[in-house]
Image (cartoon, rainbow over all chains, first blue to last red; front, side):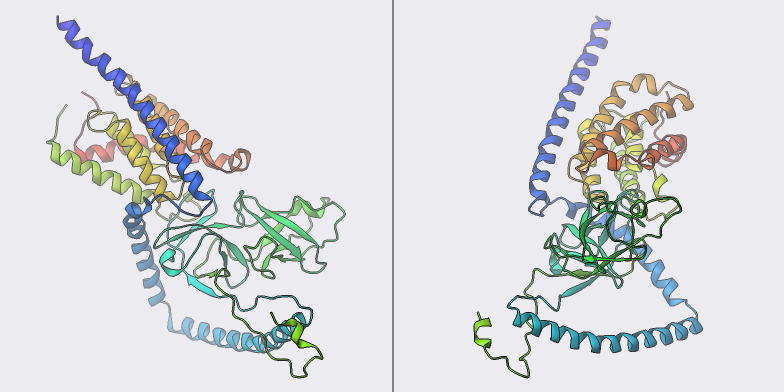
Length: 297
Length: 163
């Protein structure tokens, strides 16, 4: 009698365990399938709101610490940095003058060629949250989300070059996949020759691979790779990487390319909102060409 | 076995899980980040082994969903992994709790490896690209740290593992 009483709950418990496992497996697969399906349209199941507090909780103290270390920097450091920044701003303003002239000229010439040209990308400044997701995966979480106009597929750059693109958005945050992620490919163009190819991520933040270039392609160490704009995600012409220096006794392609953007320590990122209507800048040509009417839509 | 009242039990469970989730995504810097063990899995194992009535496969599944959202995975990856891990832990529970600490850590290593493998399998990107040795470090550190987890959580919650 006692044996049976002891034995029975064990069996019931055991079979309940199997049933629960099956429930868990089926439910997981269903959720995974739904997520996989939604991923294409850039949505997620509305679940991340639940863990948003945890993310903020982790981010908060780290931010506070950073603020404090900002606050306690020496006066002399600040003066020096100020000086440096002022010089840099001046330099950039000088370049900007030239750039604007070139841009206008470019727009005018393209107008003559009857091709459209998007100028003036609109950007949004985003700050990475101090969260480490998975170290071997090149994902960043930033503090701007759907509420601020971030959408899936938008390009993300920093002051130097391309960082990646928006992978997922929630209301307050967005996950950004970096160009060095193994699953990410960036269509690029070698600036010097115009040769187009694809730069694949390797999982290391300091290296991109160029697997589709032939061995005799015309490339040299230090060549600049810029986005070609063929994928419709990255606007054309942003710097991506430089060809790595040649190693002794190795073909040059072996070394891959080194990303220009500071992928591992960024404080500010720019989300490029190309999906919004670009600024139309079509200045009237000063000397009007003979037949401009054909160019008007 | 000293049993705490139910309410405080539940609070302790929620607190430790919350703490584990925070530690999971704590920015540890370049050197330590690859070794950060899966704290949530460790805490789940801790709660599965002494009190199976409180926390079982379905609990683990729900916690897994939260971890998925937390770490930007597809929903269901960690849910599946934690569910299976909990199932295996529950199957071996009777033996596991009686083992010496070193052997127990080895079993925990096995469970964590199974969990990592399931997350890897449900990953979209190509398998070879993600297969770096680094991927398995957290399971290893998790097993190494298991005695410490037992010690700390035991101090925090007062739930004993051994009769």
